[in-house]
Length: 329
Ligand SMILES: C[S@@+](CC[C@H](N)C(=O)[O-])C[C@H]1O[C@@H](n2cnc3c(N)ncnc32)[C@H](O)[C@@H]1O
Image (tube, rainbow, N blue to C red; front, side, top):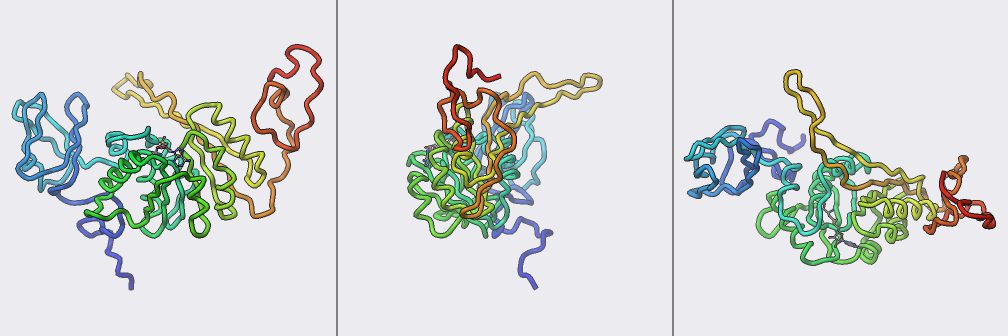
């Protein structure tokens, strides 16, 4: 019989490393208060402490011991909704070193890079640790997330954030997490064994494709997260030229809020128009190549103006005949 506690236990089992508690709010936990204008305030519950706002104060003791999901009123009549922060809320409010992967993209990465319990995942860079939290959640305590980070000050921010999210006891971290200071291009080859997934959130992921190919298991996935179209083009073409990956899949996700009120049902006025592009490709088995494409590239796609990596099976460039010969149609 399994010794794993049943899902009915009053709290989430600590050995699940979920970063979540059930049951009454307790001292040392973080809460998120939302005021009547939608402003958010995050703080750690401390016995005897007060939270101050432009609407007076609230005693932490009023919240400690209650089940989350209630409204409290401050000394000057302000109303606040009280919940524990969700992962998607934590990562956008936590202290940042580098820019974070937004929750909409973290969700896409976990789903489309197929991060599963027990997976051996490598990411770079750790940055502020936002994506790390989602990866660790997905692999669970029996998986492994090795996070490389070039900059010590960012690695420290990532460590603080990830440890806070997973409620790591003093002096410990999530058991599946291995945070390494250094360049992924060097450190990856020093890792023991192979890995299942490699996530690249950095300026120049194309420079990591050769080492990623060496470390990935056949069928493994490399996923790059890049902010600009020039980066997108370079990483896709580098993956193609390498030859040991399937045709790269580039995409982006757009999320639009809706206003729904009686007959006034319309898209919201604001949206995050752009975060980054994602590219995934799967590692072929050693010595294997994907089938040759039967469709020819768009005319001019790899014309004289194109200066990036060139797939080897392209027809040679025609002799220049005049202006506009190589323009993309
Ligand atoms: C955009 S941030 C990553 C944010 C992170 N994914 C998050 O969600 O918080 C990019 C990070 O990559 C690091 N970096 C860039 N090139 C690297 C490399 N070759 N190896 C390791 N880290 C690298 C940078 O120092 C920076 O902290």
